[in-house]
Length: 219
Image 1 (tube, helix red, strand yellow):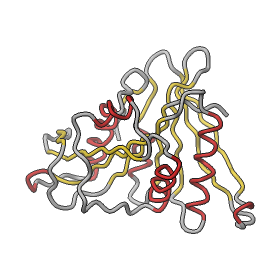
Image 2 (cartoon, one colour):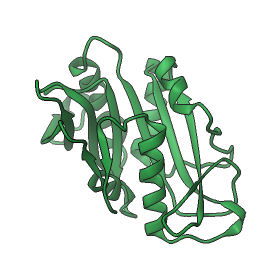
Image 3 (cartoon, helix red, strand yellow):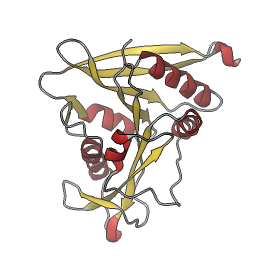
Image 4 (cartoon, helix red, strand yellow):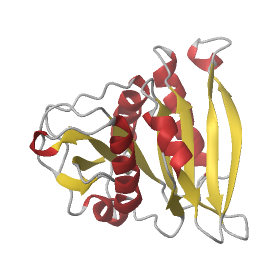
């Protein structure tokens, strides 16, 4: 199981945003999409019979080398969440190239109130805010990812157990990570869930500098 040095972690949340992002991203010409399920036993944590399950999707070049990988994960609940994310991070570290991997973690929420940040137009011309922050270690690539964006507001609440656990672990392990959040709405305008999904997909496409490997489909 080979993992690229750029890894996007997507959680299939109850609102369906994680699934929408996973379905909207397509490889650019010259790259091929491959996917495989994985099951990592959690017996060593005392969780006998439990597994960290999910899907690993990679966009690879003609030599089979993955250029970007996506871990598409279920919405793990405690106590599985922390153990599962620890095992997945261990897998990424062991299977990625010699260069330290960079994680990109989108967290998508419904619009709720007005935030001030980077603003992106949706397909209907409405505006949705985008925030990005470096978590864990930082390097030249993570600096590029967050350059020009605004840090998430202090009021942001991560209502996702897997993402909460992931961010805590990468802080401790000093793994370069960029958290991308969207969901605030600019100047009180409303936007539909579909608009928000499109805005976040496009924002991820731009912020992560993955234009060479990703095409954005329709949510």
